Length: 220
Ligand code: CTP
Ligand code: CA
Image 1 (spheres, helix red, strand yellow):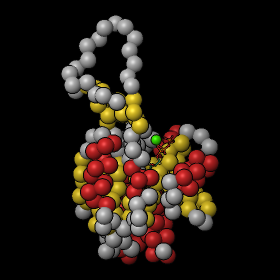
Image 2: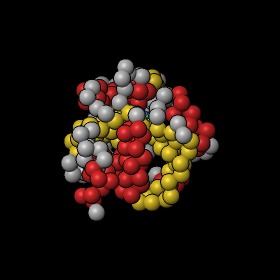
Image 3: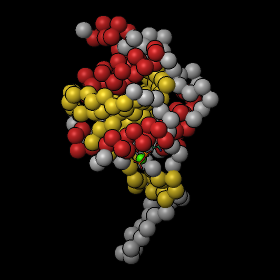
Image 4: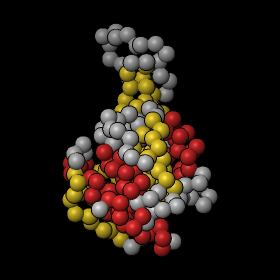
Protein backbone atom coordinates (compact mmCIF):
# COMPACT_ATOMS: atom_id res chain seq x y z
CA UNK A 1 0.00 0.00 0.00
CA UNK A 2 1.46 3.32 -1.11
CA UNK A 3 0.56 5.20 2.09
CA UNK A 4 2.57 2.68 4.10
CA UNK A 5 5.53 2.88 1.75
CA UNK A 6 8.48 1.77 3.84
CA UNK A 7 6.92 3.29 6.96
CA UNK A 8 7.71 6.80 5.69
CA UNK A 9 11.41 6.26 6.01
CA UNK A 10 12.30 9.72 4.63
CA UNK A 11 10.04 11.73 6.92
CA UNK A 12 11.70 15.01 7.94
CA UNK A 13 14.25 14.73 5.11
CA UNK A 14 14.63 17.11 2.16
CA UNK A 15 15.54 15.53 -1.18
CA UNK A 16 16.71 17.46 -4.25
CA UNK A 17 16.80 15.63 -7.59
CA UNK A 18 17.71 16.46 -11.17
CA UNK A 19 15.90 14.68 -14.01
CA UNK A 20 15.44 14.70 -17.76
CA UNK A 21 17.85 16.00 -20.39
CA UNK A 22 19.32 19.48 -20.63
CA UNK A 23 18.94 21.56 -23.78
CA UNK A 24 21.85 23.73 -24.87
CA UNK A 25 20.99 26.49 -27.34
CA UNK A 26 22.87 26.81 -30.65
CA UNK A 27 20.64 29.67 -31.80
CA UNK A 28 17.07 30.77 -30.93
CA UNK A 29 15.50 27.79 -32.73
CA UNK A 30 18.08 25.01 -32.34
CA UNK A 31 20.04 23.22 -29.69
CA UNK A 32 21.81 20.06 -28.61
CA UNK A 33 20.38 17.68 -26.08
CA UNK A 34 20.61 14.15 -24.69
CA UNK A 35 18.20 11.23 -24.89
CA UNK A 36 16.24 11.10 -21.63
CA UNK A 37 12.52 10.61 -21.06
CA UNK A 38 12.79 11.73 -17.41
CA UNK A 39 10.79 8.67 -16.34
CA UNK A 40 13.37 7.30 -13.87
CA UNK A 41 13.96 10.69 -12.21
CA UNK A 42 10.24 11.40 -11.92
CA UNK A 43 9.57 7.92 -10.51
CA UNK A 44 12.29 8.52 -7.90
CA UNK A 45 10.88 11.95 -7.00
CA UNK A 46 7.45 10.34 -6.52
CA UNK A 47 8.93 7.50 -4.42
CA UNK A 48 10.77 10.00 -2.19
CA UNK A 49 7.56 12.00 -1.66
CA UNK A 50 5.67 8.78 -0.85
CA UNK A 51 8.40 7.95 1.67
CA UNK A 52 7.61 11.23 3.45
CA UNK A 53 10.36 13.53 2.13
CA UNK A 54 10.09 17.16 1.08
CA UNK A 55 11.03 16.88 -2.60
CA UNK A 56 12.41 19.47 -5.04
CA UNK A 57 12.72 18.18 -8.61
CA UNK A 58 14.89 20.27 -10.94
CA UNK A 59 13.83 19.09 -14.37
CA UNK A 60 15.01 19.59 -17.91
CA UNK A 61 12.45 19.58 -20.74
CA UNK A 62 10.28 16.42 -20.54
CA UNK A 63 6.65 15.56 -21.27
CA UNK A 64 5.66 14.32 -17.79
CA UNK A 65 3.23 15.61 -15.15
CA UNK A 66 4.54 16.81 -11.76
CA UNK A 67 4.31 13.90 -9.27
CA UNK A 68 1.97 14.45 -6.32
CA UNK A 69 3.67 16.17 -3.41
CA UNK A 70 6.69 17.25 -5.45
CA UNK A 71 7.88 20.82 -6.17
CA UNK A 72 9.16 21.00 -9.76
CA UNK A 73 11.52 23.67 -11.04
CA UNK A 74 11.74 23.57 -14.85
CA UNK A 75 15.00 24.49 -16.57
CA UNK A 76 16.55 24.15 -20.02
CA UNK A 77 20.34 24.36 -19.85
CA UNK A 78 22.94 22.76 -17.59
CA UNK A 79 23.90 26.21 -16.27
CA UNK A 80 20.26 26.91 -15.33
CA UNK A 81 20.00 23.43 -13.76
CA UNK A 82 23.10 24.11 -11.66
CA UNK A 83 21.68 27.48 -10.54
CA UNK A 84 18.36 25.91 -9.47
CA UNK A 85 20.18 23.11 -7.61
CA UNK A 86 22.42 25.64 -5.84
CA UNK A 87 19.35 27.58 -4.70
CA UNK A 88 17.68 24.45 -3.27
CA UNK A 89 20.61 22.44 -1.87
CA UNK A 90 21.69 24.23 1.33
CA UNK A 91 19.26 22.47 3.68
CA UNK A 92 18.97 19.23 1.66
CA UNK A 93 19.71 15.84 3.25
CA UNK A 94 19.86 13.96 -0.05
CA UNK A 95 20.83 14.88 -3.62
CA UNK A 96 20.04 12.49 -6.46
CA UNK A 97 21.46 13.33 -9.89
CA UNK A 98 19.33 11.52 -12.44
CA UNK A 99 19.50 14.13 -15.21
CA UNK A 100 21.26 13.39 -18.48
CA UNK A 101 23.19 16.65 -18.36
CA UNK A 102 24.83 17.70 -21.63
CA UNK A 103 28.57 17.48 -21.04
CA UNK A 104 29.18 20.38 -23.45
CA UNK A 105 27.30 23.47 -24.63
CA UNK A 106 27.85 25.73 -27.66
CA UNK A 107 30.52 28.23 -26.60
CA UNK A 108 28.67 31.24 -28.02
CA UNK A 109 25.00 30.69 -28.93
CA UNK A 110 24.00 32.83 -31.91
CA UNK A 111 21.65 35.71 -31.12
CA UNK A 112 19.77 35.21 -34.39
CA UNK A 113 18.79 32.15 -36.41
CA UNK A 114 21.79 30.80 -38.28
CA UNK A 115 21.22 30.74 -42.05
CA UNK A 116 22.45 27.83 -44.11
CA UNK A 117 25.22 28.48 -46.58
CA UNK A 118 25.60 25.05 -48.13
CA UNK A 119 29.15 24.78 -46.76
CA UNK A 120 30.24 22.44 -44.01
CA UNK A 121 30.16 24.06 -40.58
CA UNK A 122 31.26 23.24 -37.06
CA UNK A 123 30.12 24.47 -33.66
CA UNK A 124 32.63 25.22 -30.90
CA UNK A 125 31.65 23.55 -27.62
CA UNK A 126 32.72 24.31 -24.08
CA UNK A 127 32.42 21.93 -21.10
CA UNK A 128 29.48 22.24 -18.71
CA UNK A 129 30.00 22.04 -14.93
CA UNK A 130 29.46 18.63 -13.33
CA UNK A 131 26.51 19.44 -11.07
CA UNK A 132 26.66 16.20 -9.06
CA UNK A 133 30.43 16.39 -8.51
CA UNK A 134 30.08 20.00 -7.35
CA UNK A 135 27.36 19.13 -4.82
CA UNK A 136 29.37 16.13 -3.55
CA UNK A 137 32.44 18.35 -3.10
CA UNK A 138 30.64 20.86 -0.86
CA UNK A 139 31.59 21.00 2.82
CA UNK A 140 29.08 18.82 4.72
CA UNK A 141 27.52 17.52 1.51
CA UNK A 142 24.08 15.94 1.42
CA UNK A 143 23.96 12.16 0.85
CA UNK A 144 24.71 12.10 -2.89
CA UNK A 145 23.41 9.49 -5.32
CA UNK A 146 24.60 9.36 -8.92
CA UNK A 147 23.29 7.56 -11.97
CA UNK A 148 25.47 5.97 -14.61
CA UNK A 149 23.93 4.98 -17.92
CA UNK A 150 26.55 3.08 -19.88
CA UNK A 151 26.61 1.18 -23.15
CA UNK A 152 29.29 -1.29 -21.96
CA UNK A 153 31.53 -2.24 -18.99
CA UNK A 154 28.89 -1.14 -16.47
CA UNK A 155 30.73 -2.29 -13.32
CA UNK A 156 33.96 -0.52 -14.22
CA UNK A 157 32.40 2.77 -15.30
CA UNK A 158 29.69 3.00 -12.63
CA UNK A 159 32.01 2.15 -9.72
CA UNK A 160 34.62 4.48 -11.27
CA UNK A 161 32.13 7.36 -11.23
CA UNK A 162 31.23 6.59 -7.63
CA UNK A 163 34.86 6.81 -6.58
CA UNK A 164 35.86 9.77 -8.75
CA UNK A 165 32.90 11.91 -7.69
CA UNK A 166 33.19 10.64 -4.08
CA UNK A 167 29.61 9.38 -3.92
CA UNK A 168 28.30 6.94 -1.30
CA UNK A 169 25.97 5.41 -3.91
CA UNK A 170 25.61 5.07 -7.68
CA UNK A 171 22.80 3.43 -9.65
CA UNK A 172 24.05 1.94 -12.90
CA UNK A 173 22.26 0.59 -15.92
CA UNK A 174 23.05 -0.42 -19.47
CA UNK A 175 21.27 2.01 -21.83
CA UNK A 176 20.05 -0.82 -24.04
CA UNK A 177 18.14 -2.14 -20.98
CA UNK A 178 16.05 0.88 -20.07
CA UNK A 179 16.24 4.05 -22.13
CA UNK A 180 12.75 5.47 -22.70
CA UNK A 181 11.10 2.28 -21.44
CA UNK A 182 8.71 1.88 -18.52
CA UNK A 183 10.89 -0.74 -16.88
CA UNK A 184 14.61 -1.05 -16.29
CA UNK A 185 17.31 -3.25 -14.82
CA UNK A 186 19.88 -1.60 -12.53
CA UNK A 187 22.79 -2.36 -10.24
CA UNK A 188 23.38 -0.33 -7.07
CA UNK A 189 27.03 0.36 -6.16
CA UNK A 190 28.03 1.45 -2.65
CA UNK A 191 30.92 1.08 -0.18
CA UNK A 192 29.87 -2.53 0.46
CA UNK A 193 29.95 -3.57 -3.20
CA UNK A 194 27.47 -4.22 -6.00
CA UNK A 195 23.80 -5.00 -5.49
CA UNK A 196 21.86 -6.07 -8.61
CA UNK A 197 18.18 -5.10 -8.55
CA UNK A 198 15.91 -7.38 -10.61
CA UNK A 199 14.23 -5.93 -13.72
CA UNK A 200 11.07 -4.08 -12.67
CA UNK A 201 8.73 -1.25 -13.61
CA UNK A 202 10.44 2.10 -12.98
CA UNK A 203 8.03 2.88 -10.10
CA UNK A 204 8.94 -0.34 -8.25
CA UNK A 205 12.59 0.15 -9.04
CA UNK A 206 12.41 3.67 -7.62
CA UNK A 207 11.09 2.28 -4.35
CA UNK A 208 13.91 -0.28 -4.13
CA UNK A 209 16.44 2.51 -4.76
CA UNK A 210 14.83 4.78 -2.13
CA UNK A 211 14.79 1.92 0.38
CA UNK A 212 18.51 1.30 -0.24
CA UNK A 213 19.46 4.96 0.10
CA UNK A 214 17.31 5.47 3.19
CA UNK A 215 19.03 2.50 4.87
CA UNK A 216 22.49 3.93 4.08
CA UNK A 217 21.36 7.39 5.18
CA UNK A 218 20.08 6.22 8.56
CA UNK A 219 23.26 4.17 9.10
CA UNK A 220 25.43 7.29 8.70
N1 CTP B 1 26.09 14.72 -13.96
C1 CTP B 1 25.90 16.02 -13.54
N2 CTP B 1 26.39 17.07 -14.28
C2 CTP B 1 27.06 16.84 -15.42
C3 CTP B 1 27.25 15.52 -15.87
C4 CTP B 1 26.77 14.47 -15.12
O1 CTP B 1 25.29 16.23 -12.48
N3 CTP B 1 27.52 17.88 -16.11
C5 CTP B 1 25.59 13.60 -13.16
C6 CTP B 1 24.46 12.82 -13.77
O2 CTP B 1 23.20 13.36 -13.41
C7 CTP B 1 24.67 11.43 -13.22
C8 CTP B 1 26.16 11.33 -13.05
O3 CTP B 1 26.64 12.67 -12.99
O4 CTP B 1 24.11 11.28 -11.93
C9 CTP B 1 26.87 10.57 -14.10
O5 CTP B 1 26.59 11.17 -15.37
P1 CTP B 1 27.26 10.54 -16.65
O6 CTP B 1 26.93 11.37 -17.85
O7 CTP B 1 26.95 9.06 -16.68
O8 CTP B 1 28.81 10.65 -16.29
P2 CTP B 1 29.91 11.71 -16.65
O9 CTP B 1 30.65 11.96 -15.38
O10 CTP B 1 29.36 12.90 -17.35
O11 CTP B 1 30.87 10.88 -17.61
P3 CTP B 1 30.66 10.39 -19.16
O12 CTP B 1 29.48 11.12 -19.73
O13 CTP B 1 31.97 10.72 -19.82
O14 CTP B 1 30.42 8.90 -19.08
CA1 CA C 1 28.04 12.76 -19.22
